[in-house]
Length: 160
Image: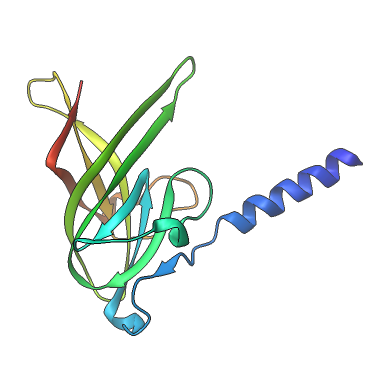
C-alpha cells in the first residue's frame, strides 16, 4: 500500500512539473502577435540583447524552458546544458554564452533543442539548435514535417 501511495504522489509531482505555460516576456503584446518557444538543453539568458532571469520559464526536469515572446526576428543567448545517457556512459556538453537568431512567426509554437552536426572533415562537432514549428511531442520525437532547420550558434561552438 505504501508503494502505491508513493507512486501516485510521484506521478502527481511529475505531472505538475510538466506545465506548458512558461513565462510571458511582454504581457502587453497580444497572443496573436506572439510566439511560444520551448527550449531544450538551452537556458536562455538574453533576448534581443536584454539580459533576464529565466527562472520563471523553467518547467519540468532538466534544462527545459518555455517563453512567449513578441513575434519577429529575435536573438537569443544563453547556456548549453546538454547530456545524453547511453548504456554504459553519459555524454555531457556545457558551454556558456552560446547565441543564435531566428524568426518567430506570430501565433506560432516552436521547439528549439540543442544538437550537433558533424563537420565535413568528420573531426569536430558543430553545435546549434534544431528548430521545429511545433510544441514538444509527447513521444519525444518531433514530427519531421515540422522541421524548419538547423541553426548553428554564432559565434560557432565547436567540440571534438
